Amino acid sequence: MATYIFGHTNPDSDSIVGAISLAYLKNQIGEECIATRQGEISPETEFILEKFGMTAPELKTSYAGEKVYLVDFSDLAQAPHDIKEATILGIVDHHKLGDITTDTPLECWIRPIGCSNTVIKEMYDYHKVAIPKDIAGMMMCAILSDTVIFKSPTCTKADTKAVKELAEICGIEDYKALAMEMFIAKSAVEGASARNLNTRDYKAFDMNGTRVGVGQLEMVDISVLESRIPELFADMQLMKEEDGLHTIIILLTDIMKEGSQLLCLSDDASKVESAFGIKLQENQAWLDGVLSRKKQVIPFLQPQF
Ligand code: MG
Ligand code: MG
Ligand code: MG
Image 1: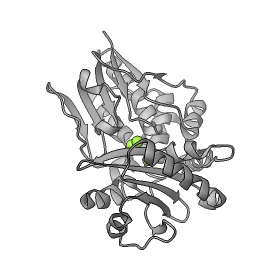
Image 2: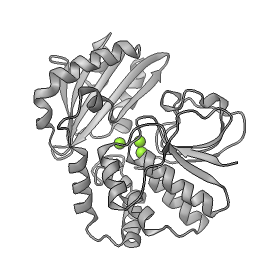
Image 3: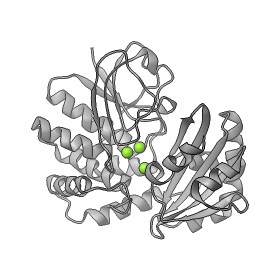
């Protein structure tokens, strides 16, 4: 029986590529594994798959009775609804440890570095398995995405080293130019609905019994979204009601200006204000230097609840 490997809900490139790259490694070392995904592919991931001639993993949202590996998350709120009925064989991640627990011993590769695919690169090295060119290229892109081309404070030496080695394997010298192309593809917002934008990279968290949602749009230039902010807020209000959220935050992250415009609707906005030492104006604030949700947003928000 095969084992499934998948990333978090609203999968980003790390989640999709991580499922593919880890499944390939596992198959090479004699564990039959299938890469899957929990949701739709983003424009950025589409760009990566196309660039390296790969197809998306199959969509699968139910895992009761199956064996699974989790990539890029360990939070129940980002897991399939029936994860408690699955056997978790392992977790490969680079986030805070979430609230998923297991009944049996598991393999864990969790490191405080920039990308799950950097961890997977280290797993390939550990097992002495060669990475195929196309998979190496995709892993490189996933790392460049998660680390915002090395600008994110989450980026470590392990990540830059992995990118350089993967660039060599896939034969792409100017990987920063490719990354910029990728971020331009990611910044495509024309014709996208407010819900699509709000959920493109959206994560829900259980903060001490309180449900908090934080979405992020990483753009080359966030000013193209200015006229759509009222629409984003209207949809945030709907998401807040539908999902029983205490607080919903959408971060419009400008990777060139290196900061984020925070949009927030909350039952108690003072929690958000004290988390970041800001005063919201019309439910918004500019957070200078903030690029990373996992390192610069969640750790400040969590203690407020
Ligand atoms: Mg991710
Ligand atoms: Mg990641
Ligand atoms: Mg990200």
